[in-house]
Image 1: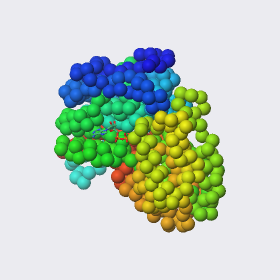
Image 2: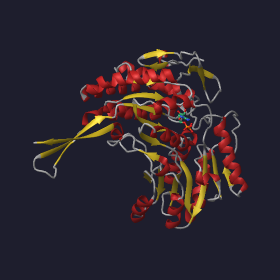
Image 3: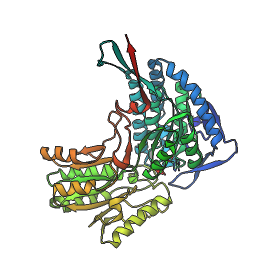
Image 4: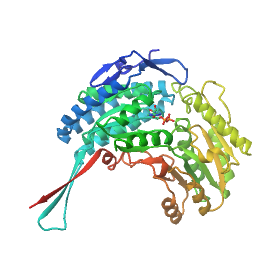
Length: 484
Ligand code: ADP
């Protein structure tokens, strides 16, 4: 299949290893399919461990020279990369939608969001300040230097094929690190296109490699090779825990952006229309396939029925279809496994007494298209109270008191995003402080941007991406003690 791109060279199906665009030495490939049509778009290499090792060795050489360059030079190259990504928005969005499925408008939004991290860290590169510390002895001086971690690795998921990549590569390169990236097998083409633009912007050969193939095999090399000093991972909690264990043997640093189970709370004094709009944005974006999607909607008894009625009406009006068609709100789910998961969660809820207010089944379009759904009469006993849905289902739980809803909201091992709607200022502070989450959206369902620290607590992960704190994940502190 060919895509009608302005710059057809952006559709690249080789890997970038040690500065060269190559196929796998074995000739093995994996197919990339369009989830809307199930057509094969490309075949990318399935490289083996020796090829990953080559990428890591080249990264080590390139990193030394990169770290030695003035931050201003690194910043200028990142800035050029940002400009090239923005200029290529239409092509990148089409590649992204073709392999991931989200509506083109959302894909364009993701490219802008992805680019914003490159712009941000291009600026931050110049502001990695150390300290001189007043010490306890008169004849000693304490200096704290900030230095790059070194050669880093990243493993990223399919739900944001551009943004999850730039928010790792950009701070790494800004800090003076090198990176070997393994994008998700479902969505490698966006990553490879971004790497082409990075090369054109002047990112030196070998500093950034992009490799595809067996996750297990690549993961094994990235987590065991002693040259890699840090792994940044975004994906499921299950795989994240496995990778942390693997990293323990060589004591690598890790940044983990893992699963969520976001509560979305609507109090009696909320602006109901605003809460419905917030729920739409938070729940149905990317067909519900984000780790910050509202997973459990808690609505206070006094406004429960009004909220359900308005939300169901809005959800019924959503247009489902291929992301490349005009005016589509919801694309297909990523694969058959995603559909089965959603189906199982709905069956479980139905067997325990839940009612479907709208949607509830496979979409007439077939394939992996699924109807956007609202479910009421839900309880703590149902599986989606505990599990990340990752699909377009909004389960609504009725609650009575503030204390009760905080207990319910925190009753999960996850702690990524949370949201609530209300007007009472005292309660806004109380609830925001008591929610055991890394991020709290108050009267908004969209919280992610490059200036804010994104990340979770508990089993949702460690480390922060974006913001002035994001670069810290790629920096080591060195303490220098000077005796006068
Ligand atoms: P998702 O549910 O988003 O697919 P995963 O955690 O399964 O989440 O995948 C996220 C990323 O982790 C993908 O790039 C995937 O290929 C990779 N991955 C999956 N399993 C492993 C593994 N055992 N070792 C290393 N990487 C893995």
